[in-house]
Every structure is written in structure tokens, then in C-alpha cells.
Length: 101
Image (tube, rainbow, N blue to C red):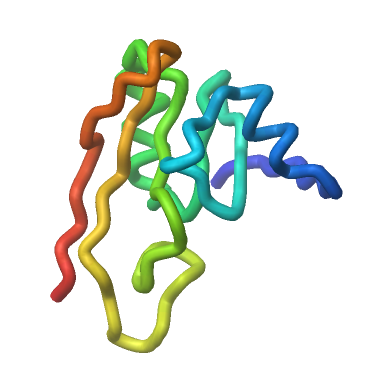
């Protein structure tokens, strides 16, 4: 139930630089939701938690493109992955962990 405005860019790195997304946390998609950066294939429930709890972070990310994340489903195959929060001072913290079945 998110309202989406899709902005296509030939320079996605400029967007990542603008929002200071650390290179090691980068992925393929960048969204700004209620002022937070959401990078990569982050599950909707984590985005809802971010918006509800309003932590003092820049945003959350799923680095890379792990199999089994939303949009990266490959049958029943799933990798263990983490959703990472990050702040302006490059601090990082595990926001959520998803275990492979």
C-alpha cells in the first residue's frame, strides 16, 4: 500500500552519493520513504517498522541482491541476509535478519 513515484535516472550513483549510501551497503534500487533512504530489496514489513519507530538513522538497506529477498525470489531458494540501518556518521547496525530455510 505504498504510493510510488518512479523516477528513472541514467546516473543512479549520483542519487546514492546524494543520500550518502556507503558503497558496501549499495544495491540496485534507491527509494526515499518518509525522509528515510531505503536501498535495495528491503522487505515491506521492515519499511513499515522504520516508518512506525522513526529511529535516528539515514535509512535501511539490503546490500547486494540476495536470493529470496522481495523481487529476487527464485522458487524456494533463499539466502540468509540482513537488513542494515545506517546513519550519517557511517555507523551501521543490524535492523533485521532473515535466515535461509
